[in-house]
Image (cartoon, rainbow, N blue to C red):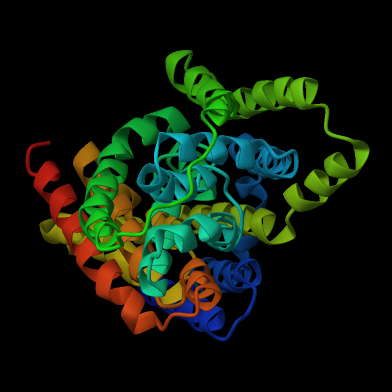
Length: 391
């Protein structure tokens, strides 16, 4: 029996999660508190039934996919494959490498990953004579092009599980977000890069052959999209081939295992599914649908935006906003707008760890970084909304 109205319980729970994250409480723990609180307030004793039912095959597949993706990401980095790929880009040209390096490292989902790309690409940026705020913008922006599309990302994996859609479907659906972000980033970034007249050191043309190291990403895309293979099997097959080709030592394998078994991310998946199941059983989604049905496009865009801009964690909007909004996400257009709202919020959030770490590494103040981030984000949102009008 519910202790209070389900919509009030949902509001309290979401606000509590956001406040806890702002107080630097672990995101997994914050989500656990919010999910359990909502279940107790909206379902009473029935919360135990919801928790048991939440542990299903979709949850297991999501956890396995997430773990395997992080295992592959760590191995790709530790074996030097990522550095070799970046060296091949520098042959094409310094400007191309300036944008493509963080974008490629962005294909490897890792907490604070923008710091990794910042360190790797800094020598090139110095050779090009880029200002610190420009370094911060390019590294931060292009590092996050893929967060709504690439099937290794936690948000895509989690959304796939919660929505019951394949990762390849989500990837194709959200590609306009990545393309809009890419176009906007080049428009504002290239203008800044052109201001620097310093020539970067030439890279040996022989490095171009190192572009072969891009194959794991092609493998995952081909298996999951062209062959419509479950993302778990797509990553697993690629991972087995990767280990056979690069032969990482025991130390690297153990490090990757330790990195991939991440308690925080596992907790986020588990309690996202519990939260979703509690929302399903409380019927609060039907209330929200009737309340917001006349404003569906606004709701599905701004609710994820507000949630992620508050938490600073780029996939929390999926865990918190998608379950109650699920009845509103009845078309590709509304689903695209919900991901777009999350993307815009993630890029604007001052609590986003990648933004803070990039700015700290390049020793630039956040307001200076926002000089480029804000207009680029606005243009991205405009392009996506323009595209959605023709869906």
